[in-house]
Length: 435
Image 1 (cartoon, rainbow, N blue to C red):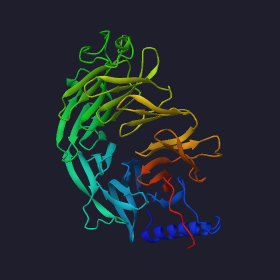
Image 2 (cartoon, rainbow, N blue to C red):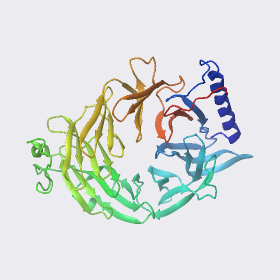
Image 3 (tube, rainbow, N blue to C red):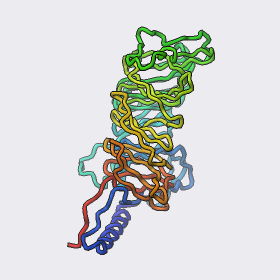
Image 4 (spheres, rainbow, N blue to C red):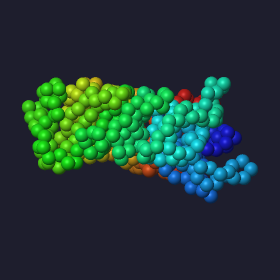
């Protein structure tokens, strides 16, 4: 991250360019549009004489978090410093560093974020939550408050792949899973595969206080012909007379089940699946499951916390896992982009007018795509309203293209590419004039 002087200098240049442009636009000033480049910042990608590995970028819609392990010697004021630990840098929508800090030990597994905190499974046999330190200055701006550890919990088991919500942090490892209270770090439950009637945990999604788990029994040979309890797991939509026959695993090799656990580890949902899902996501208390049926059809199943299947919808075979914002799940299948209302199970809209070339991101306002249309000569940004109508399109600078990761941060879209952050406008800005 550049210092404040360099940041101001770059923005003064951008302002001068905007002002200069306004002089030649019919005398009425230049109005920045959606997708226009607003700022560029360097993350300081140089790692000195040590090593920096396992770098990940995460966003909560308000801040962008750079999470990385640092080990060795890095440049510091007046020389070099020895570093060894998981380091977090949090950026806001202007590209400014809001806070940064070290967890004290390198992370293992997969970190997660929720409610402004970063959760780690650390090499020192702890699980920890890092957050911004309280500050007397609430004005925002270019504050660079240090981080503080909100809590630390001993964990002498394997490294954890963490998934977090505002209420729970769930870690999966080769022997099972463990849940922690996201506020205090208190251990809430433990799932031990040796004590469970399944062999593997395939995937986990956390929605509020419901932990959704796809579990796999790799030694199944009982020819299960339906849900574990057909009376408890009826298809309330009655959308297919053969629905129960689709909930089968008759090959005697592998049985998959969707389990829902409450915050204390109690099972509230137990429903068999026709195959091991290609992905699992959560939208509040609803599980979104991408399955392949016995007819080799790809479908989205929406299952609520009572175990009822709200709906089943056909999906394009190439559909990747959805982007979930509130009660809307957005899908990208290459040439087909669609949105589904998870509260009703209805498809809100579908379009085939765009080709996705990179990431897709979303917020409560719009869906944003790195891709192309027939009228674009190179990769750009495309914004779609929540009725599927095009809001705007914009070409990306040549050096950005569609290779970077795309995030939504409040009033800006941010692309992370090769150590650089690029901030783009989400909407049209105010008009600059010469008067």
